[in-house]
Length: 310
Image 1: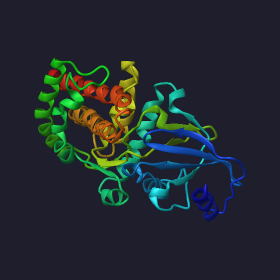
Image 2: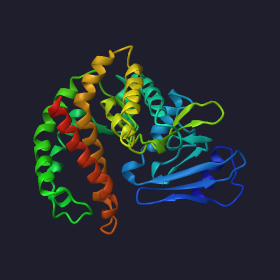
Image 3: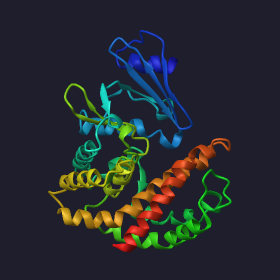
């Protein structure tokens, strides 16, 4: 508690009660601290995710209210403190609201076009199309994607063959996406409905958990945002709202064509992230990552099939 108390003191706050464990798992630990100025969260993550505090500070300075306020930033390896924001999480909102979250993010992403050096300086991962193309060979890893991987619900032999084919085709797709508008910008990286919400007071959209913040093609965020949205009309309307946020730069038709190229790459980007988490996990933890790892592998296969049909 010494580090937390020192960070609170630097922000002019004092802890007023016991600290509560909110979440503690392989990637991070999150504590909730009652203080003289309201509740504060302290988060400490793996070194590969510790840039989140710096990214939050950068975003809060340029887009007040978009993310929780960071209090008295310190060394990333000691974690960071943020003020609690009273939110209704996206998981409790209708699927229609995903379009609103995407539209807000699109407006922010427009602002970061041409300014990615600031993001990489803050520690954002580099997930540009060319960087992802260089990672395509991971799809040939039999220890993760082969029938004998030992992971629960492992890919079948035919699925593994299709994944190897995707490995051959991805670099060409990435090269096409690299020259597609609107250019490189900010990527949230994990935009599922649990990582955003709206404030009770004003209905403002707030984005949480920027641990996977990256630089790359902004359309890569669509995959995670809509993955659990199973109703086709809701998905289509969410895409329309996101594409409308790019209307100062691109027509809706241009956005749809770029998304056609980006959809498989977006699934692969998620697969790269979960490969990293699986590789850094303790042996007994690896099976816990299998549903997400192999789920994104199968999403990639479906996206590749859809692209071939279009």
